[in-house]
Length: 176
Image 1: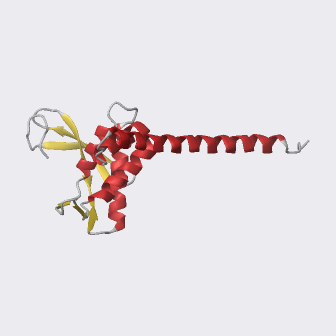
Image 2: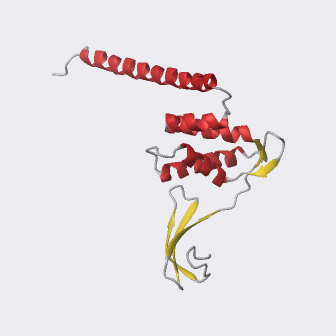
Image 3: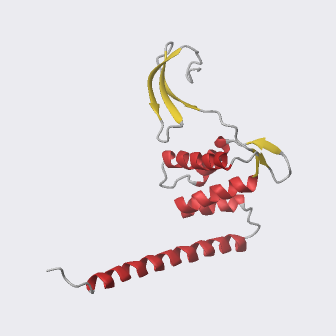
């Protein structure tokens, strides 16, 4: 492994830890030439599916592209890099578990959309605006309205559950 500072190949591992899900090993290394410390990650090389693009081209699934899209959508949002990386890992893991040799790029895009929808509505709209290639402001507004309707529905549902819990609790006989 080359040192990112001086490009020397001589370094030593000073710490190794297993990742949260047990599928990654995080290694802290120290360059023997310049003394800089850096982190590397080791993961099993799985055979990820080919992604079939809209124009028919095929390319190997690239986790870094997914990560870049997530980071761009989540830019200046209160979402940690760790959360973004966990999201990319989950998308990759789901594709592996599906076991398909090829997947349309739309499957990857929709997986990112779903993850962002659950993570942050602003990041979701940012990604959707690029991914869905809105042609005009009306398409963009329609997407926002759908998101608002969904959010309002979730709030109403929470209020009903909360009110039902209060009513049910007030009518219970005391256990004295």
